[in-house]
Length: 209
Image 1 (cartoon, rainbow, N blue to C red):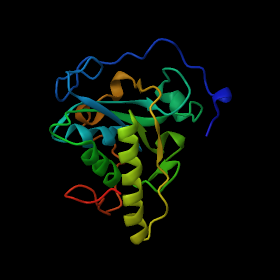
Image 2 (image 1 turned 90 degrees about the horizontal axis):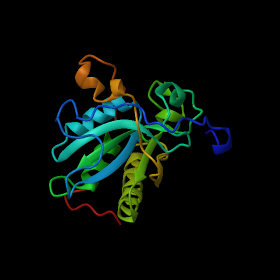
Image 3 (image 1 turned 90 degrees about the vertical axis):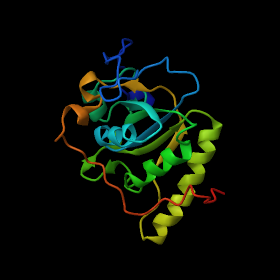
């Protein structure tokens, strides 16, 4: 991982992004309707990860971007250089009355392999690391609990230790417009998302303690 003193400086001007979600037509940047909440996940290439979440009932909107690093408003090329500290991330705007944060975490854990360190499948580099960036202490507690629960399930299935970064969200920087809802614009586009086949035992009364 690059350190803050060696990271690229970036820029003060945000990258240009569309106002509306290509699939839902909802806003992808604040302000969002009252009562909605946000979550940020990194699970490899953000194209396929975003599609998983926009297809989830109760999700109002999604966007792809960069999080967890140091460079201000990085470009895709800068992020892929490994010199920003960011990982490819998905912003999920959801209605907690329709879908819980725990359910989103179940989708996150089952949608990729969180034991691979700085890669996801054939995609290699710090920009593909698994990550959960929590908004508040409630999200942190649930993220940490589900990491332990799913980690136990993975070990039972003979996988390695969970390497997912769980940290407070600093800034989520929106990616370039051509990355937003990429797989809706490009039906046959690349999707590197693939899980372990191990079920995450949360929900349906499962204990997180």
